[in-house]
Length: 494
Ligand code: BG6
Image 1 (cartoon, rainbow, N blue to C red):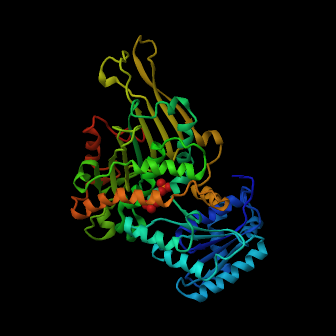
Image 2: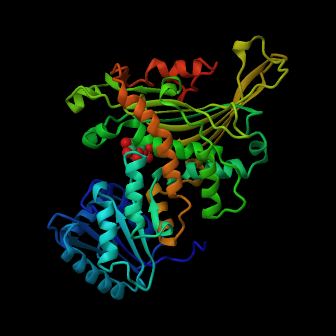
């Protein structure tokens, strides 16, 4: 893919008055513009129910990007590319009017009929919109048309299938870009490079040398204003089905034979096909759920989840699990995952724990042992740390742990691009590698559905962890049963 090529397109954002557009999409489009990744031949059409005008919309866009813009002139120039179109998703005239606006903009901005339809709104309308876009001729252009879909992609396998069929009736698989924003994160994209561009890792990357892999994605925030959505979703659907399993797939996949979208996706799909399926009865052996009660986060008293949602909810705000991958490379190596709201801090990290060597003579006793660890820091810091053993200064024959660290932010001297910026750019260039293929979505749901089924059948003893902690004790026991423990996500978290 020639990244020097600057894509031209009209981006239509459904749900343009919403939070995602304001927090992520407008700033990302601005960054692409500022960094010269897109030129002047682009336009953005905001579509939503509210009866806004272009001016009101542009004012909104200005507010969301103004901190990053050096001068008023550039701000005005940038926002002049934005148009607003009040819309009723079920009304044919909304589509007719949008169609003529888009062809006017095609002419005005020279976008060659290229269109991105970005659905950043309530998922119940995804199918209707996709079908109407096709039926009312909005896909009939001389250029390409692509559909970007935000999560949630269904609620379980059967609803995801139904949604996918609706979308596929209007768009080809190659035209559908399912967002998993973790795949746009710099260090998530770096997993493959760290693995496949380093002999010292790839040769050891298997069950002979790795004892277990731990993936933690913790958040300090609670559910805030998203309680309505979250209470029906829970951490399993919100984080595990997508982001956590995507990271598992990237860590577990075989090297692709080429760096093409199809080859990479096919290796990820194979890894997901190797997840050991659980039966409903086995769920409690492999997975732990939690919900936060009151506690302290960053010295502040915070409410428990049930206080926030105002009822006796059975929704999990925390999940820890042990995932087994039944293939030649990974047989016997647990992949432990944990994620939750209102934990001690915001952090996403991967720890690869290596097995000890057979005759390690440099420890006085077992408690002194420090296994080699490769830590991949996804956020907030970005980098890698390798934990090694070296001689303790002036003590003969005694090993002491040392760390080699690489910090991405430090080296680049600037913040790495936002996930959304990269993903939008990829979509404009037609590169779907960092979007999830339908098969990945389907395999992830079928793995997760058994867990939801087990949990729906049984009421949990919630709350079972205090806000501001690393989760319920049962998550520690999950590893202790196998002789492991969670590696700290920061120096003082235990
Ligand atoms: C989203 C979830 O997909 O990811 C949110 O819906 C969660 O509940 C968010 O907070 C976490 O993303 P990040 O990039 O902040 O780790």
